[in-house]
Image (tube, rainbow, N blue to C red; front, side, top):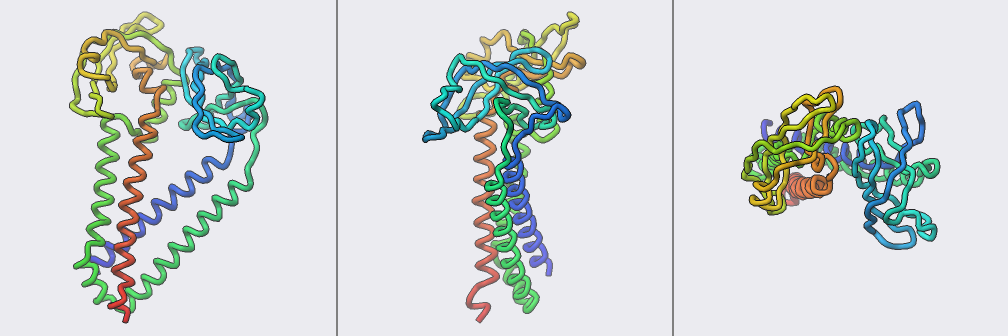
Length: 321
């Protein structure tokens, strides 16, 4: 029963993985941030630098690039997306000022929300998400229940089938490739784990900015969007005048531009200047968001192929009469 157990274990991991993602994506977006000072909300004035229309219509989806002060009083940039429910009021235009809230309880997720009016709870969205999860769970239960019944009815036959099929090989390839890509992208610095997210969050929202002198640079040999990734070593002075060393990776337009770069803007923690990163890496999350989407699409395609292979093996008409 070695190959049977291996195949069923891989199927279970894949199904639970997508159930977790479905629940996370549904309910993390279903509940808006409530302005409550007990949870650490702080109101800030933000200037709109640019406005990009993501989706048009009567209630367009906009992406705003905002400039505002973080908790340490340092100005930072951050992008947020908002649904403009009242476009006739022309609230979101370049160079205008809006009121935003920063909710510390959202750490390490995006703490920014519009504080122009109280948040509303969307019961319709929650119901839709709940229905999606119910349908997924029922579908998985029916698939696995029927498969287990057939496998236990003829265990030796299915053991040979799984041994000679590519099902378990596809499943192992899916998991190994996914883990490898995830670790590789983390190593490059375009994907981060929860610990790194909290580290970056503290630097961006509690950090202080400084101009650092580049002391050394090294081409990592990695290309991101056809642009080289360089490892920069830099020096800067803290508020106390202490000279601090740091290093971080940065995507350069080309090797020449990286060689000509003498200074970089960095952010560091007031109480721990040794914790620092290049500001651009903290503010700009467009590519990491894009890459994360591509990663999830690749994993999804592999998962579908794996499930189809399992379905064809278990429910083969020649085996089941």
